[in-house]
Image 1 (tube, rainbow, N blue to C red):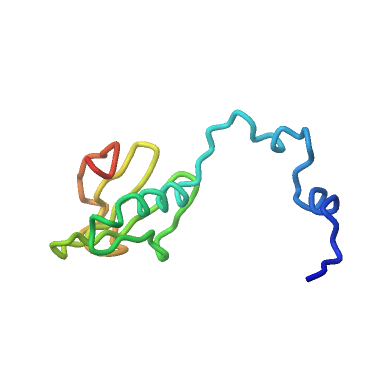
Image 2 (cartoon, rainbow, N blue to C red):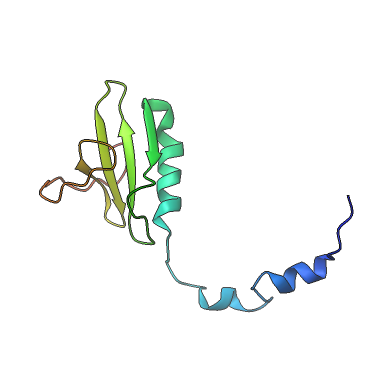
Length: 109
């Protein structure tokens, strides 16, 4: 299959220039929590009945929500932040603001 674009044009279209130090992002600790949440899901999916990043609750650079159903059919909504993971609801896509649960460093804890 032929294309009308040469490799040199691709580098200029990407928005990043060589030597641009990632357009000001070098050295920052910016994380996308949705990507972190996807990594958590992929790491633990074998051990639960169902687990996925919520599509209805907002995900941002600083927060993401993960729905989990255990092998025992218990459902949880987890909040993932820089502080760790915590249970925020006992149903998919549910956030109970009155629920007081601790943060855990890892999904295993």
